[in-house]
Length: 321
Ligand SMILES: C[S@@+](CC[C@H](N)C(=O)[O-])C[C@H]1O[C@@H](n2cnc3c(N)ncnc32)[C@H](O)[C@@H]1O
Image (cartoon, rainbow, N blue to C red; front, side, top):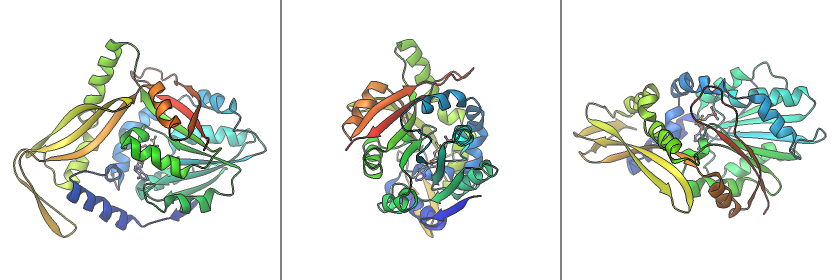
């Protein structure tokens, strides 16, 4: 493993997330990925990662002005997971003479361990940061690590951007990213044709069934038994930002007493615990949404994803103000 930088320890993060779960009846999405949640996630995700056409991604980046060989670029992966999605891109850039330093940020130390294993034999410089990027002091802490680079790219890969409240995450990027640095987002795009959107809608709304091991592990860890409740899905949007947003709740059917952090809490029939939101985007609307927060759209591409039925779209922005 490269350098591990710890902004806050795992136990205090876990305590905070569990407190939020109990007090707000909402599961911070970080809880999904702690401990064996990391392996459970990649038991599904690794098959997708193998489909990433990294040569196409390499071509996309090398045609941008930001990758000049004389410059030292910091590639900051926010929610880096096991780092496999970016591995081949970084390896190729480094091999071809680009000066790349990698910073993998994640609130799950299990994920950072996987990232360390993925990149173990790579020869570009790399650091791993155990941190919650939503913490108020995260930008200043990160800046101490990445400030020495000539330029930085802040990536959110694997639809991570779409799991957060959109105003929260866009404002956070607005605070984190200095002028002339870059943001690189990986999102699920909507289609133009309604029948294709119908299929996408059906697929997204079934995510808990399709990723049942991943969901059931979390529910089990929190004491939310499917014998006493059910997972329900609601579709909504994000106001001016045009999205197809699916939010999954655990709806209590018979009283559940959950115990964590030395306290017990009763969940009553009809109560709902928010589990996760996922989104598909109208790319034009997303560009406008970020434009209002000082990000100018630069370029985009939709990877050729082989036999997979849904698309990803990558969008690159530069911070202007
Ligand atoms: C959807 S996964 C994507 C992982 C990886 N980028 C990929 O494409 O496979 C989201 C990742 O973000 C991390 N994460 C979620 N919220 C976070 C936060 N507030 N601070 C740091 N990491 C976070 C999770 O632990 C998880 O590894």
